[in-house]
Length: 464
Image 1 (tube, rainbow, N blue to C red):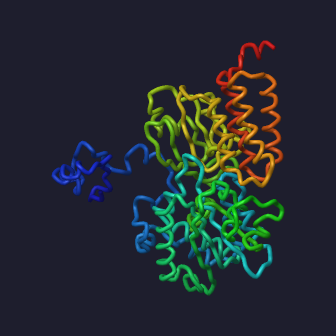
Image 2 (cartoon, rainbow, N blue to C red):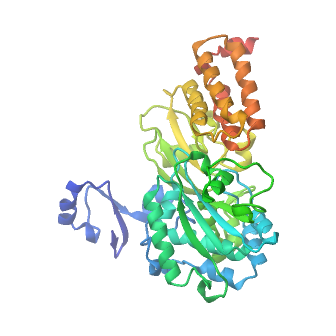
Image 3 (cartoon, one colour):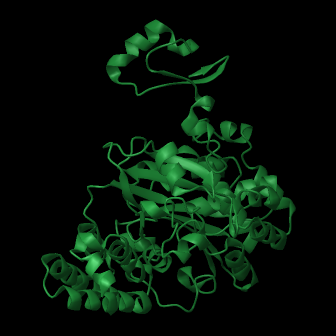
């Protein structure tokens, strides 16, 4: 509730609580058992660095006036005044890397498309947010759709693309409708169309709804789906930046990457680069899920630790038992043990310990979790979601489930452990994309950090 003192938060509010809130005068910020005080002073929010999510929850998502009043389109105006190469350079200098999981430098991808001559170029936003425990894309598309529209328009002007597509997963119908409405309003106001903001350069935008395939979160499978084909992975090369959608140069970024661009252009590359550490610059919206007292989105600069996120923001386990592990980076991410909770969240440091930051999804587990079952679940997930194009993923995942079942059952455990290790190596090295290539991450991390759950006698192994 907006009051003369500032925004005041109440919650969680049930329908039966509403009459009492009015009786207490909540619309004036009055005291009530459900009152949390000033929203900006709630520790969960006050300790965040909200750059990409600065407007979410503050503005009417579909109000252009609200968006403009809170700094909207300032980045686009700046981009219009610059040469395309200078816009690409600003994104490069900011240190922005892909927020979808691969962490590839965004500026390098844009420069490749800019430097590739073609009569038609495209911007494709991968909004197929299928990882378990992730929801930042949905929150941004539903809570601040113009931010994504602005970022994609800047990308189009920067590389010479005149058409953009947002590929939204079928499970996000509200985000789909919100984007459709926002695109219509932006077009009517002149922010999209034949002459963006009157600059004489064109950029048009459409939103497309996926059919529910997890594999379409992989960029080339998404392109196949956008072209009206079955969503299967393409072999590379050629890279999509050179021959992507309909064979034309295409920038493919996810929602969080594109949504960071307007701020970079509006405030400057140095402003964004000042957040983070090492080669991991800026902020990432971490999504807390699983066995935690407080789940939700936490936007922090790179360098925050998993312990800070799980304990300071998440409040520890909802069960009250000790946290044993957290899976970071989605269903194909590694299981990080409690002994590594203090490692700063940074692309390179996580890669060095055999893990990944990915899209920022974090699912927590207490000490009752059976890690052998979780490893099996990873292989079974790959069985269900593989596009089937390559043998290591299609067949390897099926064999992986069978081998893990034999290990759990105690059948020739040493032999089957060696077989599982060889199988994971084949999937890592031989799969066409990250679906099969990363399925071994959760399996190998579970085996490495929690061997006892697989019936492995660690004392005997150490003695041997």
